[in-house]
Length: 294
Image (tube, rainbow, N blue to C red; front, side, top):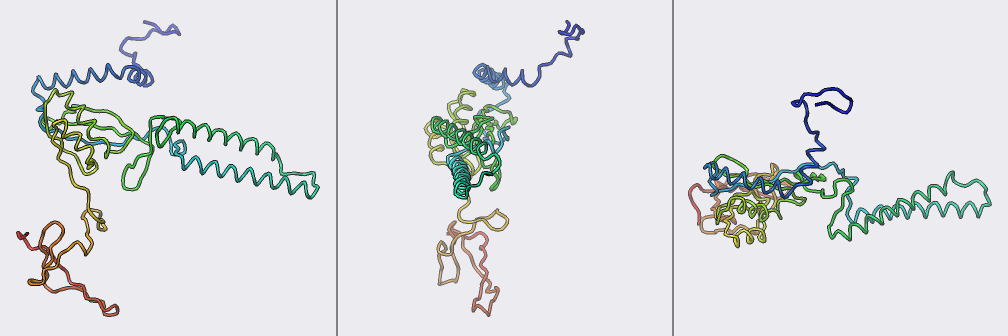
Protein backbone atom coordinates (compact mmCIF):
# COMPACT_ATOMS: atom_id res chain seq x y z
CA UNK A 1 0.00 0.00 0.00
CA UNK A 2 1.25 3.47 -0.79
CA UNK A 3 0.28 6.96 0.26
CA UNK A 4 -0.61 9.82 -2.07
CA UNK A 5 3.02 10.91 -2.01
CA UNK A 6 4.04 7.55 -3.43
CA UNK A 7 5.85 6.45 -0.26
CA UNK A 8 5.05 2.85 0.67
CA UNK A 9 3.44 2.39 4.08
CA UNK A 10 3.10 -0.84 5.99
CA UNK A 11 -0.50 -1.70 6.91
CA UNK A 12 0.35 -1.83 10.64
CA UNK A 13 1.41 1.83 10.59
CA UNK A 14 -1.98 3.00 9.30
CA UNK A 15 -4.05 4.34 12.20
CA UNK A 16 -7.08 6.65 12.23
CA UNK A 17 -6.44 10.04 13.78
CA UNK A 18 -8.62 11.38 16.56
CA UNK A 19 -10.83 13.29 14.09
CA UNK A 20 -11.72 10.06 12.28
CA UNK A 21 -12.55 8.32 15.56
CA UNK A 22 -14.58 11.28 16.86
CA UNK A 23 -16.52 11.59 13.58
CA UNK A 24 -17.22 7.84 13.54
CA UNK A 25 -18.64 7.98 17.07
CA UNK A 26 -20.66 11.09 16.23
CA UNK A 27 -22.11 9.56 13.06
CA UNK A 28 -22.98 6.16 14.56
CA UNK A 29 -24.38 6.72 18.08
CA UNK A 30 -27.29 4.27 17.79
CA UNK A 31 -25.14 1.46 16.40
CA UNK A 32 -22.49 1.93 19.09
CA UNK A 33 -25.14 1.96 21.82
CA UNK A 34 -26.62 -1.26 20.47
CA UNK A 35 -23.16 -2.83 20.28
CA UNK A 36 -22.51 -1.95 23.92
CA UNK A 37 -25.85 -3.48 24.89
CA UNK A 38 -24.85 -6.73 23.13
CA UNK A 39 -21.52 -6.65 24.97
CA UNK A 40 -23.34 -6.36 28.34
CA UNK A 41 -25.48 -9.36 27.33
CA UNK A 42 -22.28 -11.29 26.59
CA UNK A 43 -20.87 -10.40 30.02
CA UNK A 44 -24.09 -11.54 31.67
CA UNK A 45 -24.09 -14.85 29.75
CA UNK A 46 -20.46 -15.36 30.81
CA UNK A 47 -21.54 -14.87 34.46
CA UNK A 48 -19.25 -11.85 34.80
CA UNK A 49 -22.04 -9.57 36.00
CA UNK A 50 -24.78 -10.33 38.51
CA UNK A 51 -27.21 -7.57 37.65
CA UNK A 52 -28.45 -7.32 41.23
CA UNK A 53 -26.65 -4.30 42.72
CA UNK A 54 -25.54 -1.38 40.55
CA UNK A 55 -23.53 1.65 41.64
CA UNK A 56 -24.06 4.88 39.69
CA UNK A 57 -21.92 7.99 39.65
CA UNK A 58 -20.91 10.79 37.33
CA UNK A 59 -17.73 12.63 36.50
CA UNK A 60 -17.35 16.06 34.90
CA UNK A 61 -15.31 16.42 31.72
CA UNK A 62 -14.34 19.96 30.71
CA UNK A 63 -15.46 20.99 27.25
CA UNK A 64 -13.43 22.91 24.67
CA UNK A 65 -15.98 25.67 25.13
CA UNK A 66 -14.60 28.17 27.66
CA UNK A 67 -16.61 30.26 30.12
CA UNK A 68 -16.34 33.29 27.82
CA UNK A 69 -18.15 31.37 25.08
CA UNK A 70 -20.99 30.22 27.32
CA UNK A 71 -23.98 32.52 27.69
CA UNK A 72 -27.23 32.81 29.59
CA UNK A 73 -29.80 35.60 29.39
CA UNK A 74 -28.28 37.52 32.28
CA UNK A 75 -24.82 37.49 30.68
CA UNK A 76 -26.19 38.56 27.29
CA UNK A 77 -28.15 41.42 28.88
CA UNK A 78 -25.01 42.58 30.69
CA UNK A 79 -23.00 42.70 27.44
CA UNK A 80 -25.77 44.57 25.62
CA UNK A 81 -26.06 47.12 28.43
CA UNK A 82 -22.30 47.70 28.34
CA UNK A 83 -22.36 48.22 24.57
CA UNK A 84 -25.30 50.63 24.80
CA UNK A 85 -23.48 52.64 27.46
CA UNK A 86 -20.29 52.82 25.36
CA UNK A 87 -22.19 53.89 22.23
CA UNK A 88 -24.08 56.53 24.18
CA UNK A 89 -20.79 57.79 25.60
CA UNK A 90 -19.29 58.18 22.14
CA UNK A 91 -22.43 59.95 20.85
CA UNK A 92 -22.30 62.34 23.82
CA UNK A 93 -18.65 63.12 23.03
CA UNK A 94 -19.60 63.82 19.40
CA UNK A 95 -22.38 66.20 20.50
CA UNK A 96 -19.93 67.93 22.83
CA UNK A 97 -17.44 68.39 20.00
CA UNK A 98 -20.18 69.85 17.79
CA UNK A 99 -21.18 72.30 20.53
CA UNK A 100 -17.58 73.38 20.91
CA UNK A 101 -17.24 73.60 17.10
CA UNK A 102 -14.20 71.42 17.21
CA UNK A 103 -13.12 69.71 14.04
CA UNK A 104 -11.03 67.08 15.81
CA UNK A 105 -13.26 64.34 17.16
CA UNK A 106 -12.23 61.21 19.08
CA UNK A 107 -9.93 59.25 16.75
CA UNK A 108 -11.81 56.64 14.69
CA UNK A 109 -14.99 57.21 16.67
CA UNK A 110 -17.26 56.22 13.81
CA UNK A 111 -15.37 52.96 13.38
CA UNK A 112 -15.64 52.27 17.12
CA UNK A 113 -19.38 52.86 17.08
CA UNK A 114 -19.76 50.60 14.05
CA UNK A 115 -17.76 47.85 15.78
CA UNK A 116 -19.90 48.16 18.92
CA UNK A 117 -23.09 47.96 16.85
CA UNK A 118 -21.74 44.83 15.16
CA UNK A 119 -21.04 43.27 18.57
CA UNK A 120 -24.53 44.21 19.72
CA UNK A 121 -25.99 42.45 16.68
CA UNK A 122 -23.97 39.36 17.60
CA UNK A 123 -25.45 39.28 21.10
CA UNK A 124 -28.94 39.80 19.71
CA UNK A 125 -28.44 36.76 17.48
CA UNK A 126 -27.21 34.76 20.49
CA UNK A 127 -30.30 35.89 22.40
CA UNK A 128 -32.57 34.64 19.63
CA UNK A 129 -30.72 31.30 19.54
CA UNK A 130 -31.05 30.99 23.32
CA UNK A 131 -34.80 31.62 23.21
CA UNK A 132 -35.25 29.19 20.30
CA UNK A 133 -33.35 26.44 22.12
CA UNK A 134 -35.55 26.57 25.20
CA UNK A 135 -32.39 26.03 27.27
CA UNK A 136 -31.11 28.28 30.08
CA UNK A 137 -27.62 28.37 28.49
CA UNK A 138 -25.99 28.39 25.08
CA UNK A 139 -22.40 27.54 24.13
CA UNK A 140 -20.81 28.66 20.88
CA UNK A 141 -18.02 26.05 20.52
CA UNK A 142 -19.33 22.84 22.10
CA UNK A 143 -23.02 23.55 21.66
CA UNK A 144 -24.14 20.79 24.01
CA UNK A 145 -21.79 21.82 26.85
CA UNK A 146 -23.19 23.61 29.89
CA UNK A 147 -21.86 25.40 32.96
CA UNK A 148 -21.88 22.74 35.68
CA UNK A 149 -20.89 22.73 39.32
CA UNK A 150 -17.69 20.66 39.32
CA UNK A 151 -16.55 20.78 42.94
CA UNK A 152 -17.55 22.98 45.85
CA UNK A 153 -18.29 26.36 44.28
CA UNK A 154 -16.18 25.74 41.15
CA UNK A 155 -18.16 26.02 37.91
CA UNK A 156 -16.81 24.89 34.53
CA UNK A 157 -18.33 24.48 31.08
CA UNK A 158 -18.45 20.70 31.04
CA UNK A 159 -20.16 17.45 30.20
CA UNK A 160 -21.31 15.00 32.85
CA UNK A 161 -20.32 11.40 32.12
CA UNK A 162 -22.68 8.97 33.86
CA UNK A 163 -21.71 5.34 34.47
CA UNK A 164 -23.51 2.38 36.04
CA UNK A 165 -21.23 -0.36 37.42
CA UNK A 166 -22.17 -3.89 38.45
CA UNK A 167 -20.87 -4.90 41.89
CA UNK A 168 -19.68 -8.42 40.99
CA UNK A 169 -16.53 -7.49 39.04
CA UNK A 170 -16.95 -3.69 38.79
CA UNK A 171 -17.83 -3.84 35.10
CA UNK A 172 -19.69 -0.98 33.41
CA UNK A 173 -23.20 -1.91 32.28
CA UNK A 174 -24.46 1.50 31.14
CA UNK A 175 -22.94 4.85 30.29
CA UNK A 176 -23.94 8.08 28.62
CA UNK A 177 -23.04 11.76 28.57
CA UNK A 178 -25.36 14.53 29.70
CA UNK A 179 -25.13 18.29 30.22
CA UNK A 180 -26.83 18.61 33.59
CA UNK A 181 -25.85 17.84 37.17
CA UNK A 182 -26.32 14.52 38.98
CA UNK A 183 -29.48 15.68 40.77
CA UNK A 184 -31.55 15.21 37.60
CA UNK A 185 -29.66 12.23 36.16
CA UNK A 186 -30.61 9.17 38.22
CA UNK A 187 -33.60 7.70 36.40
CA UNK A 188 -32.15 7.97 32.89
CA UNK A 189 -28.94 6.05 33.64
CA UNK A 190 -30.78 3.55 35.91
CA UNK A 191 -33.34 2.78 33.20
CA UNK A 192 -30.57 2.42 30.61
CA UNK A 193 -28.81 -0.07 32.90
CA UNK A 194 -32.07 -1.98 33.34
CA UNK A 195 -32.56 -2.19 29.56
CA UNK A 196 -28.97 -3.31 28.92
CA UNK A 197 -29.18 -5.97 31.63
CA UNK A 198 -32.61 -7.18 30.58
CA UNK A 199 -33.44 -7.19 34.29
CA UNK A 200 -36.84 -6.91 35.93
CA UNK A 201 -35.45 -5.34 39.10
CA UNK A 202 -32.18 -4.45 40.86
CA UNK A 203 -30.85 -2.15 43.55
CA UNK A 204 -29.10 1.12 42.76
CA UNK A 205 -26.51 2.73 45.05
CA UNK A 206 -25.88 6.48 44.63
CA UNK A 207 -24.40 9.33 46.65
CA UNK A 208 -26.24 12.36 48.06
CA UNK A 209 -25.81 14.29 44.80
CA UNK A 210 -28.61 12.13 43.32
CA UNK A 211 -31.08 12.82 46.13
CA UNK A 212 -34.13 13.95 44.15
CA UNK A 213 -37.65 12.79 44.97
CA UNK A 214 -38.86 12.94 41.37
CA UNK A 215 -35.95 10.83 40.10
CA UNK A 216 -36.26 8.30 42.93
CA UNK A 217 -39.99 7.97 42.24
CA UNK A 218 -39.29 7.31 38.55
CA UNK A 219 -36.93 4.49 39.55
CA UNK A 220 -39.54 3.09 41.96
CA UNK A 221 -42.15 3.00 39.18
CA UNK A 222 -39.64 1.04 37.08
CA UNK A 223 -39.24 -1.50 39.93
CA UNK A 224 -35.73 -0.24 40.76
CA UNK A 225 -34.83 0.05 44.44
CA UNK A 226 -32.74 3.15 45.17
CA UNK A 227 -30.40 3.50 48.14
CA UNK A 228 -29.24 7.11 48.29
CA UNK A 229 -27.36 9.08 50.92
CA UNK A 230 -29.27 11.95 52.50
CA UNK A 231 -27.93 15.47 51.89
CA UNK A 232 -26.39 17.22 54.87
CA UNK A 233 -28.98 19.04 56.95
CA UNK A 234 -28.13 22.51 58.12
CA UNK A 235 -24.64 23.93 57.79
CA UNK A 236 -21.46 21.90 57.63
CA UNK A 237 -18.67 22.38 60.13
CA UNK A 238 -15.35 23.93 59.22
CA UNK A 239 -14.18 20.65 57.69
CA UNK A 240 -17.36 20.29 55.67
CA UNK A 241 -17.96 16.76 56.98
CA UNK A 242 -20.59 16.89 59.74
CA UNK A 243 -23.97 18.64 59.75
CA UNK A 244 -24.79 21.25 62.37
CA UNK A 245 -28.31 21.93 63.59
CA UNK A 246 -30.04 24.99 64.93
CA UNK A 247 -30.46 25.05 68.71
CA UNK A 248 -34.23 25.14 68.22
CA UNK A 249 -34.07 21.65 66.72
CA UNK A 250 -32.81 20.14 70.00
CA UNK A 251 -35.18 19.09 72.80
CA UNK A 252 -34.07 19.77 76.37
CA UNK A 253 -34.83 17.10 78.98
CA UNK A 254 -34.99 18.96 82.28
CA UNK A 255 -35.18 15.84 84.50
CA UNK A 256 -31.70 14.52 83.57
CA UNK A 257 -30.19 17.69 82.06
CA UNK A 258 -29.73 16.22 78.59
CA UNK A 259 -30.64 17.17 75.04
CA UNK A 260 -32.18 15.06 72.30
CA UNK A 261 -30.75 15.87 68.87
CA UNK A 262 -32.79 15.80 65.61
CA UNK A 263 -31.48 12.29 64.89
CA UNK A 264 -32.83 10.96 68.20
CA UNK A 265 -29.49 10.70 70.01
CA UNK A 266 -29.23 11.69 73.68
CA UNK A 267 -26.58 14.30 74.51
CA UNK A 268 -25.24 14.66 78.04
CA UNK A 269 -22.61 16.82 79.75
CA UNK A 270 -19.99 16.59 82.46
CA UNK A 271 -20.51 20.24 83.24
CA UNK A 272 -17.10 21.15 81.81
CA UNK A 273 -17.16 23.97 79.35
CA UNK A 274 -15.82 27.38 78.48
CA UNK A 275 -16.55 30.79 79.95
CA UNK A 276 -16.66 34.27 78.43
CA UNK A 277 -17.03 36.56 81.46
CA UNK A 278 -16.89 39.71 79.36
CA UNK A 279 -20.03 38.55 77.57
CA UNK A 280 -21.70 36.89 80.55
CA UNK A 281 -21.73 33.52 78.76
CA UNK A 282 -21.01 30.04 80.04
CA UNK A 283 -20.82 27.42 77.29
CA UNK A 284 -21.30 23.80 78.40
CA UNK A 285 -20.28 20.95 76.10
CA UNK A 286 -22.77 18.15 75.51
CA UNK A 287 -21.72 14.83 73.97
CA UNK A 288 -23.57 11.73 72.80
CA UNK A 289 -24.21 8.97 75.35
CA UNK A 290 -22.85 5.67 73.96
CA UNK A 291 -25.51 3.07 73.08
CA UNK A 292 -28.39 5.20 74.21
CA UNK A 293 -31.16 6.66 72.09
CA UNK A 294 -34.91 7.22 72.14
